[in-house]
Image (cartoon, rainbow, N blue to C red; front, side):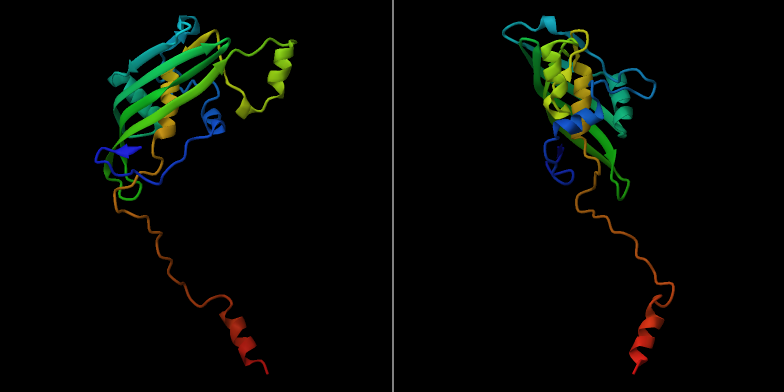
Length: 205
């Protein structure tokens, strides 16, 4: 993530592991406090041709406000995502980018800050094999990190994917340039509890 002035917004972050993505939302369906999806743009996978499919989506003010509430940031003034989708049998590969102008507050001074988030999207979806089949047995033996995201009713929600990766790209502890957190000094309330013991040992013959 970069600031609008080009300076880093905080400590460098490595690319999120797939397990981190799953822990945030196993079905890529982040929802607002009211329970409705913050941003929903469903796409039937049947619309993806053999040569692939490209899509661009952009959120309006109401969606930006809902996503800002979901992400627990002060404001989102713009939000856009681009996608390239391809199919290989029952597996759908989704790549792209999500970009947003995000308003936050410095965790030290509480001053308002503006950031530009630019996060890569890369995720696989696949239908869960029917129970009782050999494919389902193989599926069940795989670890969570090895499994693609489940494809529900042949539909992928591009808005939900954009929300998910946007949240992963937001700086969790934004700070103003040059500002460091200093823990408060702890004043001594009197002699150290072991001072008397130390004095006794010192006076021993």
